[in-house]
Image (cartoon, rainbow, N blue to C red):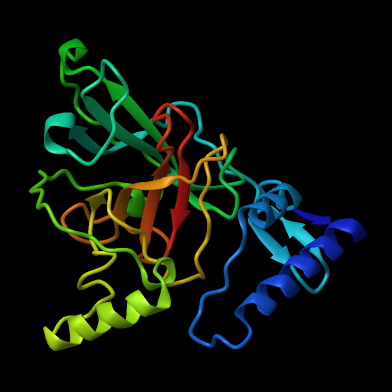
Length: 259
């Protein structure tokens, strides 16, 4: 579905684009960055649409696909608080169950520029969990979103921020250290690949994008779901689905991003 922008909104986006390029002028290795105010304005203008046609200046919305009656959410991951020291847990809970609808969705509430499975995070108390049920096997779904059952083997690592999130002089020092030690900075020291809780997101497909909670706080990377491996899922053309949460209140709605 296409929706033409008003002249005012088009001129506003063009102004933001000019400002962004002006800030990067003379810095060929720098990222294109938006201020929080600019990101909020863009989010308001896009109004949940996933794509902007900059030729016709139209918002483009994909028709959202919702689960049909009888198609259950699939379990993606279960974490216990005792195993994840980096995460903040709502009071009275010690189990997190991550589920998703195994179909692609667009225009999800609060998830601009997103196309992928609809994700839910359910915090529970282990003491209230009784019978363990067999997982559902629904029909008519995207099989790339049906994880194979497996057991976690967590490894604690130090994860450094992406280059776009560091001062230029610190990036140079880090890359020099990595070269002397025969490792790649990106993916070797920073933004580790694989399923991970916490750490830092990689911005390898886009420039750095501010991910903000609805309360205005800068959201933090909570969970990365990687394609391949034992679970065998495939998100975003064999990419990563990242779940960001609010550092001020874990009960605030999460944000989704795929790279």
